[in-house]
Image 1 (cartoon, rainbow, N blue to C red):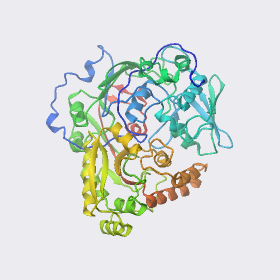
Image 2: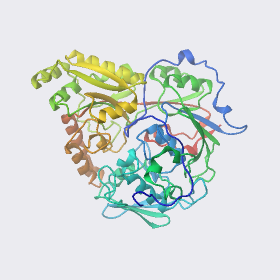
Image 3: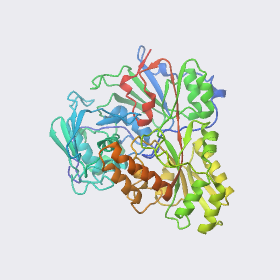
Image 4: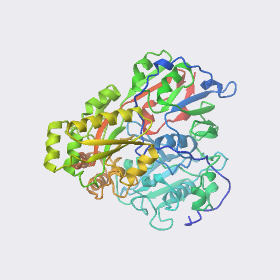
Length: 551
């Protein structure tokens, strides 16, 4: 792939740009807020069933936040990835239990040294314009992702592949070591021997792009939103139309290689969390695609005869970012601030108990969870630690949070309350998510509140503590923490890896670049007429929407 020319041209692809955000970090929100009780009788004038032609099987799924782009490589938003996942394929996808299954890859093998993975592609996969999907498309896609002239916020998912740097950018032109062995076989050379599931889970949001559409385009052309209109993909659905930032509609791909979807049309509707239950009750919505019922609506949701409800423990977590570059936020100070937060009050007050307190990023449902680490809360000790550390109590800490999420606002208010009890002054700055991300990357914050979807892979949080990462909001400049993760990833069995990740959790509590707060359950609901869902997998960015049906 030439530096300025990504290869040869054919047609125009994919759909326009908007703005959202949730970092790779981006996870489902269990937000709280105004109850749907007063709006449950809302008219169903724009109900799910009226959007398709007579006799069409239609499912309308709610997402709580709009997509930020239709360029699948240039996002860290899980909401956007759910959109892209209908249009495109990836080699594999993860399940809630940590297992991995093929999407575009029918199978894969690992060499004896565990430093190369070879994928065998489904030979019946085709692009929505009828062209076959081949290994050349896979190679081309990874070259596009790794080209530093192409805007690719998701580039860091390539970090383990040979020929790229820690950010996933190629070391020289087309240096990424992804090669086509034959038309339907592709091999990835890894930098070092490693536990292959870590690599597979890292690339399961890298979408395969049609080479015949994009080759010959310059990086400038690819970065422009105009090229990403009318998407050509190989996924289960084909892009049909959209209302900017409000809804997107897809029709089924009758040639999908894993089986044509059972429904004819899929509608994704951006829906305020406070309106989701009302929409489910009156028939505007069939299901929640990504996000949760408001905690204030949970009891009411469970009482509805037309709904199936589930409270699903997840790897999703919320964390309080500390700017470690600020001289007054020393390690001892960060420990004290973390120790002053009453996590159980957060869980009870915001999640009504639908979550669990944590002090590390590894969820209690993970086999890598270190149950010897206790969740701390001792405000008296915290205040003494601040005094001993010489913390400047006249300093007002700037606390960034994103706007529009009542759960975030509640959590921030409770955290500020806890910190004020130990004499720490805090000023909340509420901004849109894009500004939050940019300002924290620029180090304008003292504190920041974000969420992550997490994964069953214990190294998921590496991107947030590695100095070169685009989501290193805590401004760490050393690799002590990421080195432990890398050592664990170099081991090839669970038994050999576990001690390293136990140590990682102990060390991250000691260093406290963040105050991890709680995991949150997904509060899921869908209409009983919808079948074939595995809602527990939604948090792993896995819909398997071609299996959905309606009765």
